[in-house]
Amino acid sequence: MKEAERFTLILYLVCIWGMALYFVLLGVISARRKEPAGIPFGEKVPAGELADVPAYNREMGRTWLLFSIPFWCAGLLYLKWSTVGFVLLFAAATLGQYWVRMRCQNTRQRYGTGKEA
Image (cartoon, rainbow, N blue to C red; front, side, top):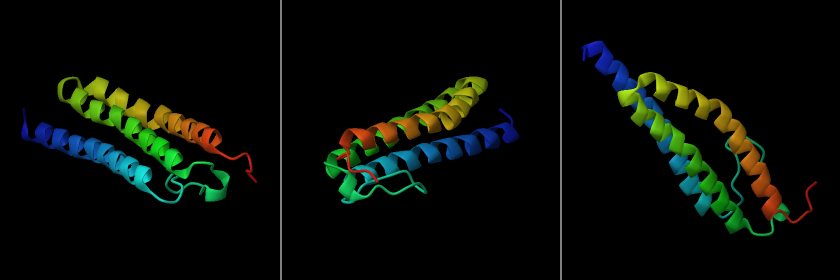
């Protein structure tokens, strides 16, 4: 492996696994919060709209942990099959955002009180 290829591989893995680690930490922090967790840089969920804030936060934490899985896998796949790893990364970054948004909305409805404004 040439020096430039090795540098590219290391840079890719640091970036991809750095994102995966960010989502894992976001999941752990979300699950342990006292106030309702939400999407970073998104709308805040008022505590009065939720019937069970701790269960809601655990589910939000689980969402972020699940979202991190394709990023970990993309890094591993990139080691052997770079194209497959890149395609998985692209799918996780595009379709995964839609999945997170839908899961967050469903979680909010599941644990909501029905008093949404």
